[in-house]
Length: 72
View (cartoon, rainbow, N blue to C red):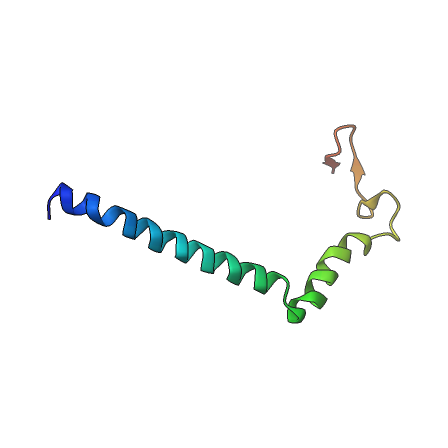
């Protein structure tokens, strides 16, 4: 196989690569927006609000310095 054969195959390979990436994109979007995943994604999205009962969002017994790092 010489370079002229590779140059001739290049557009075909690029077309297959584009088609494969498009199919993967459609699969990822359909997975992300499927109704089976909605409950899990909503749970993950609202998990930031689960720790509201603790003042300042830090765990009990820890103190934070001015940069926000926990002191021990």
